[in-house]
Each structure stands twice: as structure tokens, then as C-alpha cells.
Length: 112
Image: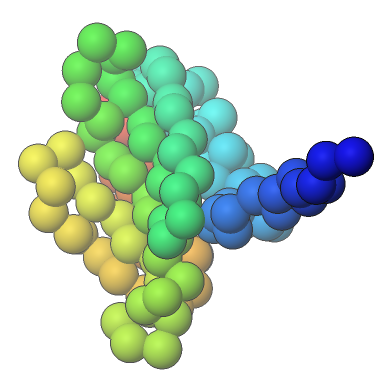
């Protein structure tokens, strides 16, 4: 008889959004779609971060990326709002204040 080799069933850990976080992000996304500003989104899940990217058009770079990096939880905060050029606009420990600049922009779009 041969040797039995166990299969590696455990996949590597990956960071993701929990239900409340994803609901909050998708609520904002839905309101921006209703305002006619965003048309597409993408999500990326890696070992050290998760990202939600919102696009004006599918062929462009994302206008905003909402990143969750748990390794920065005890430093600057695990949430970051990144603009189209890659600059971090806002960083924090909670999701709400990090989304505030986009919420304010939504108010301006709705008023116009």
C-alpha cells in the first residue's frame, strides 16, 4: 500500500466585509447610483486587505476605493477612503466617519 497524504483543506485566511459593513457600503453605492453618478463597482479580497471600488464608468479607474486593513487597526485605523489617484483622503477606526466625504458629495449631487 502507498502513503496517504492529507489534502490541505484549510484555505489561506482572507479579509472580508461583515454584513453590517457591506450593507453600509452598498447603501451608499445605491444612493450614488440613484443620483446618476456611479455605474459600476468591484470588490477585492486579499490576505491582508479587502477593498470596495466604485466607478463612474466601467472602463475607468475607480473614483473611490474603500479599504479595510485589519493590520492597521491599532495604528491609524483599519478603514481608508482612497481617491482615483491613490491618495488616502480619510482614515479611521470606524466606517461611518471614513465615508463622510462621499456622503457630503452625495448631498451636493442631489441638490444640483
